[in-house]
Length: 384
Image (cartoon, rainbow, N blue to C red; front, side):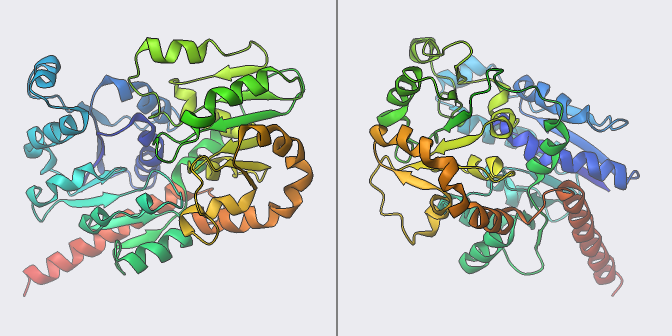
């Protein structure tokens, strides 16, 4: 059986799927497992994961664009369109697999060109609450992995998954990152609590445009906390230096880290190392709550959020609506945390399936069980 782990999206997707390949290779050594990535920008993260699975040395293939990238830009082929262009060009290669595992939905655009042999399998790259987590394109997958019971309920209600074509397996990235966290040094060495500010990338939802720079200035003017500014990696993706340089210049050595682009934005360095979370609607909060800790949320768009399931995580800490309220809320966060701690544990368990340990292995088993079931049904139908 040939299985491909395909990465044509954002580089942070690697941590949500590739650990499954490592566990699959260890548990099912007779499988033919390959990896395909869009280009060398993902290569370092792929190698980081593979280094944690000694003996797993799969074939790695780049899906090249059919022509010079600069020419494609001139023809109006933008980044999202480039993904589809790569996939279409690679169809003869992709059709050679029994299954393709992906952590994004762009690949559903070619679903009907793959043929009946090739099963398309989805592993999500987050466990957030917003409606975008529940996408009608999920119906095009033959099989889906689901992080926790919360997502299972909502996806079944919306019809984006169907009984017999999914498995609840846990949060793969968090399972993998737990192996690495114990070896990381502290973010600061001054003994002050560290606040992680993690704004979302979409301007209609993010707190960055309204509050971001003012929050950095407020923390620069006090001496009670360290601050890490670590937005979703897409917020400043491909932003020019004239945009990012003035923001990066707001960093204060030994007190404020401003990271707009490094791999530490996606490898849980900051969510594991901070003491207090400050954010808006990013699902990174669930990675932070791998260990329940104080949270403060920013309502930058006057959202009517109570009883809205898209803002479920805002029930896990105080919610403020102005920069003036941020530091007082941070000051009170540790004392008020007992009000939220039990609910954090409950919601986290519901979101990522309890203890994430073993999620990669469970995912590998679920995929193989599904494929074997389909293969058995195919053989039975052929013998009639």
